[in-house]
Image 1 (tube, rainbow, N blue to C red):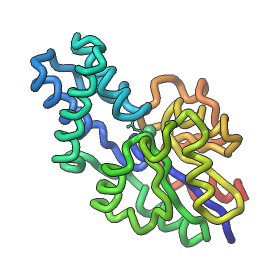
Image 2: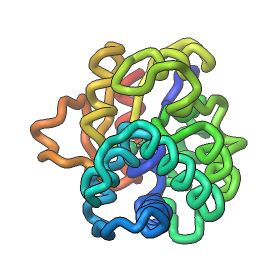
Image 3: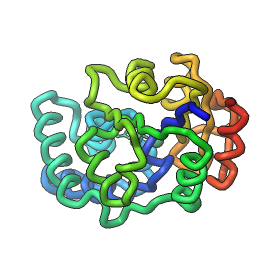
Length: 218
Ligand SMILES: O=C(O)COP(=O)(O)O
Ligand SMILES: [Mg+2]
C-alpha cells in the first residue's frame, strides 16, 4: 500500500526545547540581556529560528533592531549547532510508531520550521534520517509554515496516495488546512491553546495510536 506521512519535528517527534533554551540563554548572556524561563522559550518555538530569536530578544528587552537581530541570530545558531542534541529526547513511542507505519507501507518525511541543517543533524543523531525520505526545513524554500508550500514540497517528493501530516502546533494545523491535507495533532508538544481550538482531523497523546489514525486516511 502506498501513501505518505509527513511529520513536524520540534514538539512532535522530539522534545528539543531544552537545547533551544540553552542556545537562547547563551545568546542572551553574550548580549548582556536578562534570562528568560524555559517555559517562555518553549512558547516561542514553532515559527522558525529567526522568529524564536526575535521573541527571545523581545522578552529579554533587547528590542528589534535588524542588525542586532542578525547578530543575535548568528550567535544563537553558533550555540545551537555546537550542541543540538545534548538535552533533546525523542517522545515516547515515536520509534515504534515510525517502524509500524513503515511496515504498513507508508513512506515517511519531515516538514519542520527548524532550519534544514540542524534538522538533518538531529535526525541523524537519533538514527531517524534513513527513515525520512524527504526533509524540508524552515530555510529550504523562501517561505515557511504556515505557508502551505513547504508541506506540498515534502509530499511532492514522496509517493502518491493518501497523505497525513502530523504536528504539535497551531502553525502545523494552519499549514495543513491551507494545503487541504489531513492533519493529526500530537497534543503533548508545544501548542499554546486547547486541543479543541486547534483545527484537526485527529488528535492523539500517545504515539501508539498513530498507526491506526493513519490507517483511517486510506
Ligand atoms: O520553530 C522552529 O524552529 C521549530 O519548529 P517545528 O515545530 O516546525 O519543528
Ligand atoms: Mg512543532
